[in-house]
Image 1 (cartoon, one colour):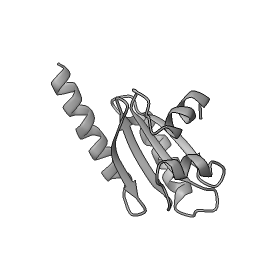
Image 2: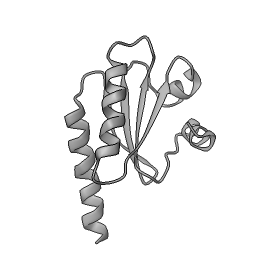
Image 3: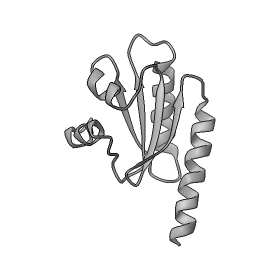
Length: 111
């Protein structure tokens, strides 16, 4: 993760670009498949979505500063705001669907 993104997140500020932040750790049997599926999905999205994995054990201060106390957690942020947070039970299809809906609404309002 870029230091400037980490610093902003510590202050509960999100980047302007669209991001999926996955909080997990290497011992989590659910997190690893979610990580690979989200990485793949971020590359296949029709609109640019950045993907960032945060190991909650390695970066406990950041994880706690965002009120994350369980894993996996996926946060979708866009234009400096947290738009949606998925915790523990979710599907990749659901994440893609919600992300596309938010991005489409933004592009409709913009154009």
